[in-house]
Image 1 (cartoon, rainbow, N blue to C red):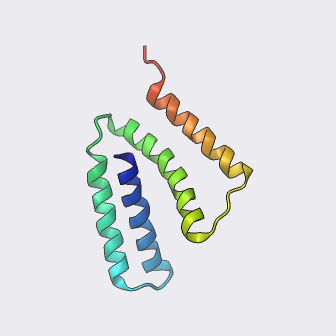
Image 2 (cartoon, rainbow, N blue to C red):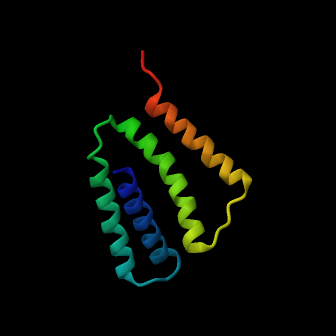
Length: 101
């Protein structure tokens, strides 16, 4: 679910951004808005509490956004990008899997 939500959120945001910032046609902005609504809907399918769900989504989306930049924009990650992503994923693992008392 988190990957699907990430695809909707990042895809919708990038389409909306292109419409507003890169002078793309209006249908791109509309498509972006539709994808963002789908993201909001998919996010509600998660069984965890709102705060936990969105904390995890935030971290996953950072990593997915960097991957999107690499694939579509030719962005090349350096060591600090890779280390930051690894730290972020480690933090997500703590949030999700650390034993609760």
